[in-house]
Image 1 (tube, helix red, strand yellow):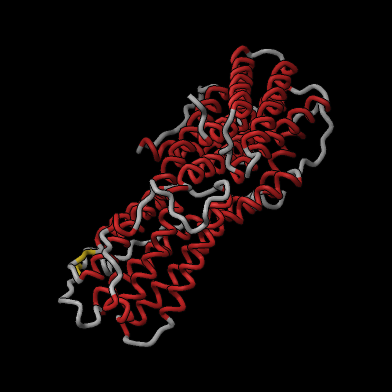
Image 2 (image 1 turned 180 degrees about the horizontal axis):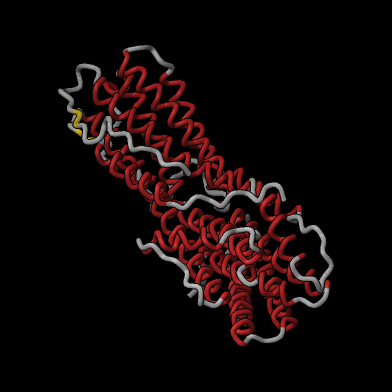
Amino acid sequence: MESSAEDRLALLLRLYETARDRQDSDMAEATSDEQADAIENNLDALKLNYLQAERARLEANGAAVEAAYQAARAAADDVDRAYRRGGALADRIRAVAGAVTAASSLLAKAAALA
Amino acid sequence: MSFRPVLGLALGAMAVLHGCAAAPRAPATALAEAGIKATGTFSAEVREMEAQLSGAEVGEAFVATLRRCSNASIKCREVPESEAVKSEREKLADVVGLRARALDALGAAYAALQTEAAYDQGADLSGAAGDAVKAANAFAAEAAKLDNGATPSAVPATIASLADFGFGLLGEQLQRKRILAASRQIAQATLLIRNGMVDEAASFGRLSRFLIGERTAARMTLMKSGFLARDDVMKEVAQQLNLNLTPPGNVSDAAYEMALQASLRELSRQEVVAAQDRYQAGIAALGALLQSHAALEKGKAFSIADVDRFLTRLDATLADAPPPPPPPSGQ
């Protein structure tokens, strides 16, 4: 079944919330300025994506949109898995960065007409 | 948010019309009072969201900087909110503000109706009603623009029409009656706003969740850093359990903090549900107003108790909502 605009917006909010709710522990674990910057930049990008999506709606449809939505869902699952496993901070940062890329792509494709 | 006592003046008031020949002043007054209350209460709720969206950067900068600088291994520097995020939040606040302005214009139209009906004084009734329609259309146009360019004034087919609330055709006789004609115009604005609110309920729900989540995340950071007393959070937990709780001396620090953190998340979830419930109560109050407008036109008996019932729900949840934490001033 094709995703709805509500599904896409909910996913972008979930991606941001996951990163936001772990930023305290992530930042406490950071051992370099680069890691700290990456945590902040990822969070900022996810927040921006969500806010832009909320204003633009995400109502465009089509195969490219659906592929972007599925990729963002997979990225969200990767992030959840990375945190559940309690892996190294570098791995978690990488997983969140992947989610940023996927979320940006979903926003760009689904909001193309807005 | 402060508790607003439920206005009981018109609670349960039954307004009865005796035919259409005379100007229906008493029921129109009751309806106008209900409209003023409903729009005022709903507008306050929407404005609260607008304010939270447009004024978050100070707290954000404090908490983000505190978070970074609490780690001695990394370089401490200020972490202001990015310009892009700030700008996007403000744009979103503007869109939310349109809803509030439409509700305020509708409130002004109800106030003009009240002046005309209750005091038999000439108010700029058609001007106020026209302004309400204009503001409602601006809100609808904005929503439609976001909705891939649908016709601004078009009400989506799945959303209610005046007929759904019991309105009949607007006859010539009706148009000659000043109060009834204004009532119909105000009803059209009420319908537009109500439908827009229904259409945007999911967005409002997500934004509530986003804003409450932001506040909760900030509270957690402040609690861990010692800026927010654990006792304050404990008080909220005790209040929910309706018990007097005293943390025992032998509970581990980590256990206590984790338990409070879990409670904060749960309190946040409850707050989101309450905000969504308030929004639905506001929509229901507008729907009840529309039914009263239809009854007024038809000369039928109507009660504004329904409007009051929804406003009571709105007020009750506002009273239950925990106050937002004070801004970290002086740091």
